[in-house]
Length: 283
Image 1 (tube, one colour):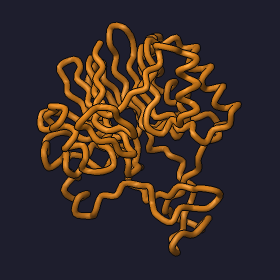
Image 2 (cartoon, rainbow, N blue to C red):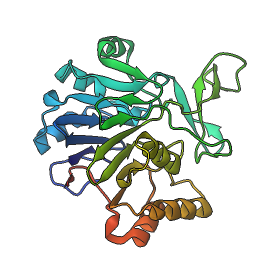
Image 3 (tube, rainbow, N blue to C red):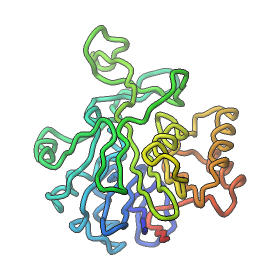
Image 4 (cartoon, one colour):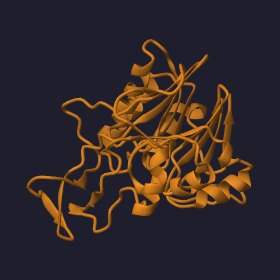
């Protein structure tokens, strides 16, 4: 297993540029995988700098339908038109975030143009539930959540029925983020779980990954954990539950938030790695 960060919010690697987004290149079990594609076409420049051939990738996985994870896919498809792209069937919603109690004026959803979507369509493989790509590589489909789950951030999408709120005269309804999914890879040492933002909760994402291979331990979790707006109490609870898994390595990336990253690093020590764009990890 080898994985490299093509896109991440930060970098300390010369020649590699950071942006708000996430993209991970993975090599394992004879497969080359792209997990997310960042916010822009920067994925190509960083790939060239890192010596990664995007045209040799076997398939790609979209964690969820937001711009900072999907912006590079139209260019990727031009370079590699034969690679399937596994994306949840609800990921093409037009959606908006909320800040300080107000709906954002600009969408946070996938920004593909109609022409780009038309060009991408032959490569898209729509998921909903569990999708087995190989015996040991699985896309979870919708990350399940308990009835009492409260997200750290609310999203809204264009939908049918009576408008709940209005942005630019568009009727919006709550986005349940059902388009969020994880990539799970089973290796001899345990499971590797990749989660883009964990909008449905990082512990729920962790449990979704574990449910793909019941009884297997989790070796590594790479996740945007979306804890920057979480309360101190919720952040402490998540850190406790992650620590209880006794994973070999936890990588909090992208939208995790500096307080949560510091808490995890303090609690887990060397088992917590703060990854940046251009970094490489091998097992």
